[in-house]
Image (cartoon, rainbow, N blue to C red):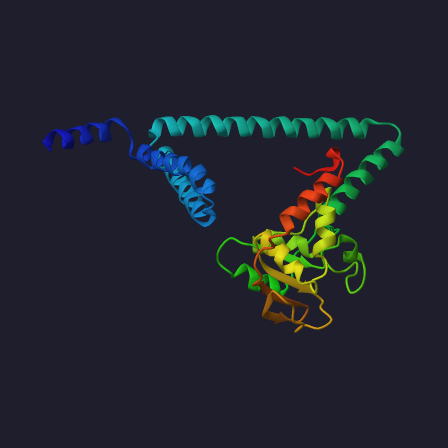
Length: 277
């Protein structure tokens, strides 16, 4: 026991304490592929958070453990470089100003001044509202974000062309953007090849086969946007929540036993170049 204690003491003096913390972070990072492979995404996210935390702490401890002379020397070098860069920038600006003032043609001076003032005005005075915003978050997505676990949802209507038709309009953000908020897997997407035929087969929720196909794709919830009847019953779907502009259903149907054969038939009828891997 004494030998082990002595060995630990020697290693502690030989290596800084930050090494153990950084090593722990590396071990956690090494376990991430196994967690992702086992589809335990929530645990993988927590492990990634801990690994990031340990790395930050370890690096900070390494910085603190630097010898004061080395740290002071490094800070002095940075300070000298910053001062030198500022001096060079000042000299360049002064030269530019002097050259501008020596220009005999007033037109070039005016153009230069107006250009600079215009750039400053655009940068600081003109509000730029060209970014896509998710606010306000619709209540159905707030509810979805609060649901624990990793599962797949399907949002209706599924046909992309309907996005631009009533009741959707140009002021409504496409609901697929909200995946970055709720973080759930999305059945909807860019339809191509086989997907186009899948889209046609699942667009009608009143068809009893549709919930069975969704169940075959492991879809857990269905969100119907702007429903004509918020309480519309569907075979194979159970109403869970009703919001002002959406109804949420839970898929209770059993996976379709015929859909794999139908899917094979669809793939046979398509050209090989149109198949989606």
